Image 1 (cartoon, rainbow, N blue to C red):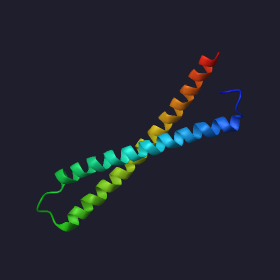
Image 2: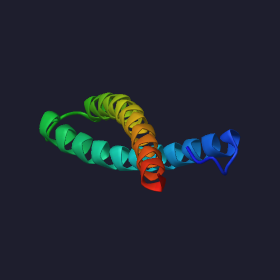
Image 3: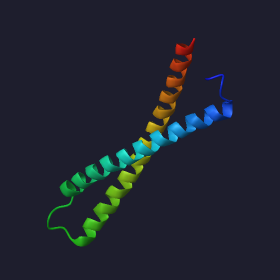
Length: 96
């Protein structure tokens, strides 16, 4: 960590970086999940199916999408925090 900045400021920077990375990752994950869910819904639902069964398939795929996007967001948040910490360590070593 930098000796020039107070610890609170350093912590806020790290948190901000993590939040930004998480937000970007969540948006990307949601887009990918939606695309995949649409493909699955097309394969699963037969063409001559009733409207009710289509709604059910849509609801199920939405739930799956929501669940997987949450997992992806958590994973990327962890990665972002680790990356930010690594960058700070490298910067500190380079300073020496």
